[in-house]
Image 1 (tube, rainbow, N blue to C red):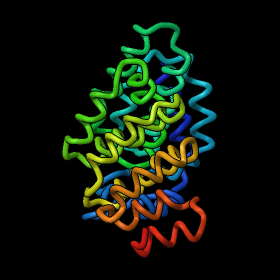
Image 2 (tube, rainbow, N blue to C red):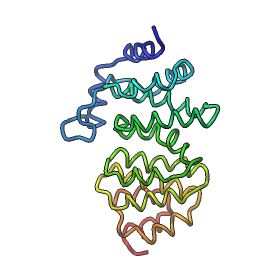
Image 3 (cartoon, helix red, strand yellow):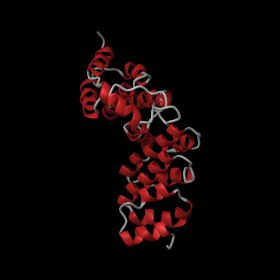
Image 4 (cartoon, rainbow, N blue to C red):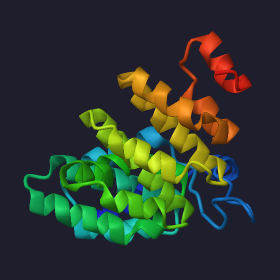
Length: 237
């Protein structure tokens, strides 16, 4: 049996129907929900991380690609964990380029917030730190909810590298987005940036906060001193 089938078998053996029902509700797999039509096995994330660490050396990136397209949510998540580890451990730029391309080609299957958040900074964000953030801006303008969240959350890699310009560029593109999952992502990345450079976040918010959706603003100012936080919320700054 090849390694991809072994991994799939190990994941299948961990199925928990009761938890699967809860996961489907949590990730809005209902009709009209942002995860509509997705399927769940009810797996625990720590179990998936253990398996990803076991299999990332056993699988070639191209062997991971079919798992990224699997109908079961947790299989896609574990495959993304594997791919992220392979990118992290890649020995040269050619290997990183190949993995980043597999990720791009399978972006339609990175279609819920946990899938995005577990992979975008580690793969595409890390690639763009070395090669430029232009494609993140393109994703942010794409009109696709999950591609837009990938663009925003991928800037976490830039934050870790001390380069904050892409964070503000993508945040401005998505400033008046309609979906709360984008509001949360933008606010989260602004807050993460502010942990490194509070003055930069504060100055940017002064220019934009009156136009920001409420959830985005609340996420961004979560760690501010209470009087300042209230000033933003009440519009008195």
